[in-house]
Length: 299
Ligand code: GLU
Image (cartoon, rainbow, N blue to C red; front, side):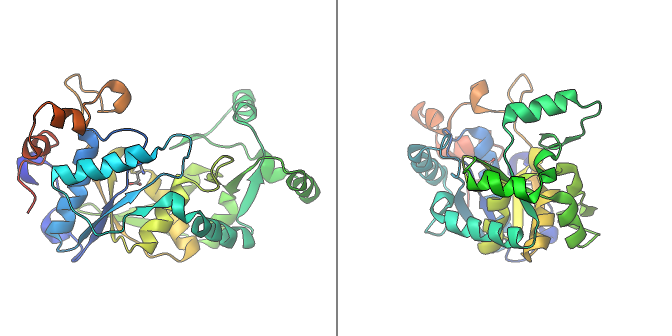
């Protein structure tokens, strides 16, 4: 247990010298739930004698804003956390994600998908049995079945398209027995097929969360990925991407999700108090750390 009852995996389970990271998307101000996630990663790195990194995951230009990225840095420093500079900012590295996509495409593991959201929704609604995955209903595979000529014609016409992983082809390429190591819980079998033909590059953003996060964790030498329990299923897909790309396997640890008095998960849209609002109301960093479940001062 961490201070104040924040559940941390046992120290002896920690990979020595573990590199952890907090990787928020700058779509708003950080609230107590983010503070919990950041402190969880920070404390684990300290306990393991390792390093804690900060990364800004801002590939979604429509939702991310530089002023929120600046506020993240300011709020975390105020909270008492530190990290090495420079901070990796994903939007500055699109060419690297493109290269990873090219590598998958060369091996025939990606295909362009021209479907609109509405078209996909209509197909799913019309299907008698529409399987669901961790990110919602699975893509029915419409564009996977396009003929090579039709695909070429639409690409040549400049039709907007996403890039999807051909899951069946990917599974034929990857080792059969994919598993992940969850700290304190041992190895768990992974089942990436439950994601179906997942989008790895969006129409509006030439990359996706799943691609960028696994790419960067590998590049930055993150050996212990920490995230909220809500993101646990994503590991199954990330292990597949790591296997396909030859990226090293990190260990995983999941933290609980803080809830409000009514038991609802803290979220910006539900009015979770922003760290800066708490600061402006006169709370000290140590008090806010305690509210976020980590009572002891960072050392
Ligand atoms: N950027 C992601 C988010 O804000 C989290 C990254 C991760 O830990 O996988 O939800």
